Length: 201
Image 1: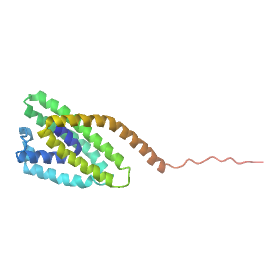
Image 2 (image 1 turned 90 degrees about the horizontal axis):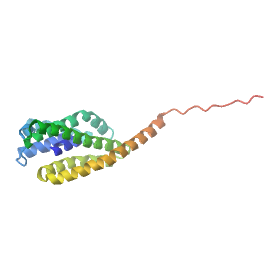
Image 3 (image 1 turned 30 degrees about the horizontal axis):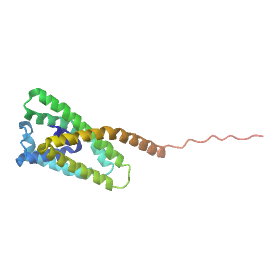
Image 4 (image 1 turned 30 degrees about the vertical axis):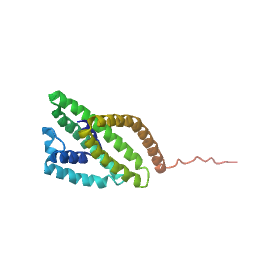
């Protein structure tokens, strides 16, 4: 439940692919509401979008636009996937509501952390850090979901550390982005004309 919400905020399509593949291969018992992730058509669509995101995520500037658009996709999807995962806990409607709230909150946290960090990285002209961050995020989704399904308590510990890091990092990142934005804006601002006084005899 927690893993689905968190991973969706980083890369929704990778999360769908990993969960679908693990369910289809028998490596994980998905709740009935998430069995649809193992459908070949769903996995194919997620795979196609993963390829698109894989390349879009490597282009500075385009990745931030992609993240902005996916604010309205990753967070709701993360909440719904977590609510679906909560059905396996046999807690009824209460469990689904808890999953919806926690999943949406975690998806928001991971998405905002990713989007703000990548926007800051894009202030650097070289592409290496952007590519490195993108590959690291994809690997984190795969490794995080595998850990959540096989070692849930370890995942919970790592998730707590991630949340603490996000609480510390995101405000600092936004301050740096604000300062960078002011600097860029100052480059395009017209200089104010200086007033000259004429001396008359």
